[in-house]
Amino acid sequence: MADRLVPVTVHANTAVPADETFATAVDVDLTLIFKGLGPLPAVIGTLDQTGPWDRVGASRKPQLSDGSEAFEQITAYRPPGYFEYEVSGFTNRFSLLIAGARGDWKFTPTPDGGTAIAWTYAFRPLRFRAIAIRLLIAPVWRRYMQRALDATVSEVHRRHPRR
Image 1 (spheres, rainbow, N blue to C red):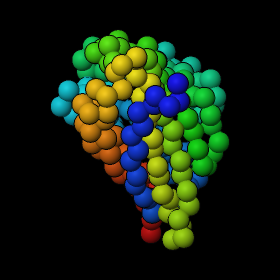
Image 2: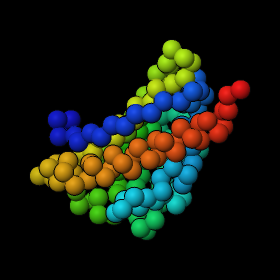
Image 3: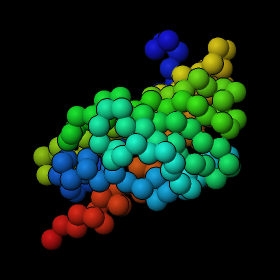
Image 4: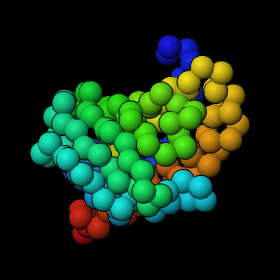
C-alpha cells in the first residue's frame, strides 16, 4: 500500500534549537495552527486525548469546524528529531476518498543553532482515488499545511524568544 500513498511535504526553519522546537511543535494547540482554508475545516478542539502527546500510543480526536472528527495516534516518538502519527476514522468527505494518512515531522539542527522542520502528510487513498487526491486535495492541503507549519514556527518563537 505504500506505493499508493500521496505525500505532501512542507518545510520551515526556526531560530530555536531542535529540542525546544520539537517540544513546542509536538505540544502545540491544534486550534492555534489549523485555521481552515477553503473547503478544509479548522480544528476547533480535541476530545478523548489519552494524556500528553509525548509517547507512542497517545491518541486524540481533533474536532473540526464542519462538525466532523478524525482519530490520531502517535506511532513513533524520538525527541528531539522525529515523531510520526497515523490518522484514521475521518467522518467528513475525506472518508469517501481516503482510508487514512500518516504524518511525520523531522527536526534537523541547522549550523546557526536553529532547526529545519520537514512535515510530510501522506494520504492513503481508497482504491481508484489517488488521482483525485493528487489533483484536487493535495494542492490545497499543501497550502493548509504550510499555514499550519508557519503558525507552529510563530508559536515556537513566541515561547522561546531569543535575546
